[in-house]
Image 1 (cartoon, rainbow, N blue to C red):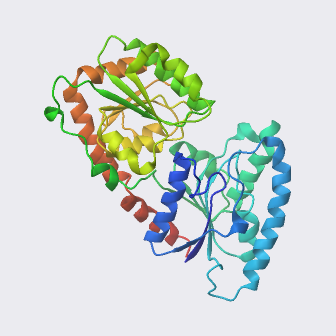
Image 2 (spheres, helix red, strand yellow):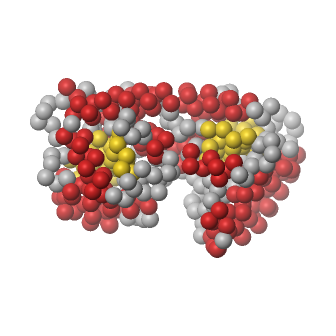
Image 3 (cartoon, rainbow, N blue to C red):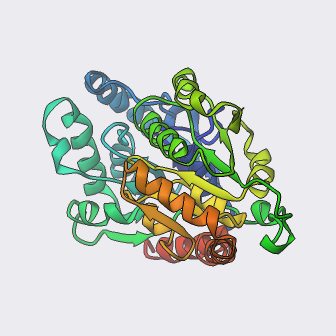
Length: 372
């Protein structure tokens, strides 16, 4: 099939790193792996980023005009033309950045409509978020297939689907190979004088990301009497505030700045634990990357994080926002290298078995067959 891949929040070629961008890229790879041709015509692209709620009415009006152009263009093309798509596939649809185009275009053209990673929360139905919320409801009502990535979205999405539409699970996934090819040394090969390296990867933005860094800083301060070094990967507008949070820890915390995705495996391989408090995290692609490289994880128990980090098996989950509990979990793993080694082996094996692109492509192929 020729699949139009629509990514309202962030396109795969965005210069700004994020989990959303990596999932958009991954969806494209999965579709190509299954033999589909992926197209992203200019007329289907929305401005990246999250608009203010008061801009939604104007966005909806513009989307109707753009949808009309897409429909006219599609109808004017001969059958088999490379821009004439057979399926509309939207990745990520939620109240702050819904899919305004898909429901209109697919209804007019009579082609299947698929959404991956949609969320629906009734509390968004009132106030400034209501227009985006209604747009999500229209998209879900029009969809033939919704692929749910985050388990917490299952019930809300199911309630808005029309009769005959299908919902299927698509677990979060990565290409495991780059992270396994530079696996860290075994625990018994590390000189006992080595100081454990604690790694965190996250954009340095305000709101939830900054809240996670606050918890992380508080936890590290509680661990200042133990031996460790921390590396923080990421950059953004909140970096100065985060540097101030970490300042009491001095040279024990290194800011690595923004790191290209291709250079991340080496950083994971050079570390001993992966830490992220995960305030309001959907699921966290970096958790998969870290575990694929054999890093045990300490994370906050929130959203879809328990679906990608198995508590007591591949890492430790702590109450969200609880810096003392987070520090205690880190201390436990710092004090028990054998436990770290056990979690490390399980983490690499679990991600390879359940979250690699090979497993995801099989799940996607099965789901898409239901459209025939």
